[in-house]
Image (cartoon, rainbow, N blue to C red; front, side):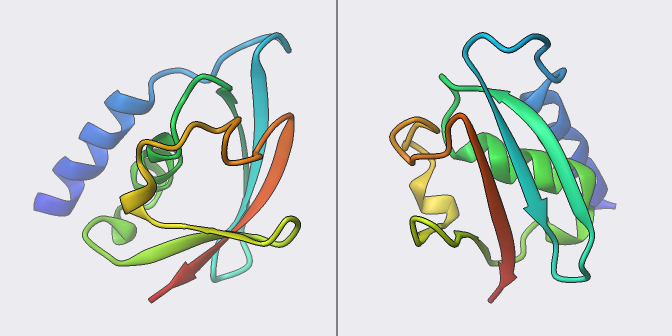
Length: 102
């Protein structure tokens, strides 16, 4: 039950998907089971919003250690990277991130 509540709280932090193309980045996520999720985010957001989004979609990720990995340029993000902006992380105008469970 606690995971479900945390998942819902993460969804509140994420909010609605932004519309349009101005100041937007599109991120594709590949989950460990092969599922692909795609969502738009404001470029002004930090990496923490990506973790919140995934945990709002998949409550099994709540309280679990995992990383988000981009292939090119090769970068690995953890929840500790919560202050890094999406632009600074080179995740604009689009990116693909693989969810790697620890």
